[in-house]
Image (spheres, rainbow, N blue to C red):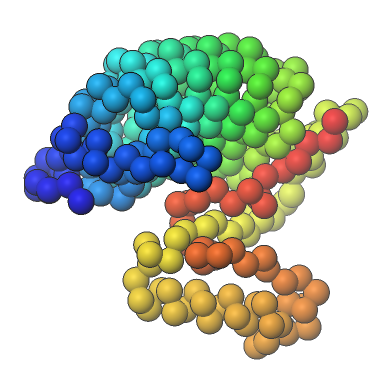
Length: 263
């Protein structure tokens, strides 16, 4: 565990980072520095040229280095739940990147670079829970994109180029002010007049003892169909996840909330 946590947050050195690298089950080198109180992006990470996956989620990072594109080996990058307001153009150099999570930050449309369109290997992009109302038009070049999260933003219109992306099969546009119109085979949905209640996943280790107990009790009631409204719950049972408790935060993307487009 990194030392030196103080007014400037946790300090991560190159030595600490190298020791924290672990091999995944599929043989990739993964560096996890999540939920550590990091306030400044550790520039020493730019010297790591053989890391495949980097997790800096749930920290307090406000800015990414201009040369973040130097970590060219990255295939998976998780920066959700930080304080990012923009993304540097150099991110377009991460041409091997297949999964990018920027959800639950402070991103505005002006802070999204046109270079996002250079990520030709990108399969999953999560931009949910930000302050976006448009996307860079260059994203029309993301031919490999399969999943896109835009939930909890400020979109008044569905980005038109989404219909051009042939591999795009899952789009989450929930809780935006967008007005959907029934399209001809375009997979658009009619807006609901009432907000829909959704559930998010968070690992049990991130909950206090009281919240964990409360969530487990609620999950048991819903699963068994007990308590008030038991007959209703018998018809709609929740799905359980190993090591995960619902509902709560956005620590992990719940794939069940993706809206599947009709093609």
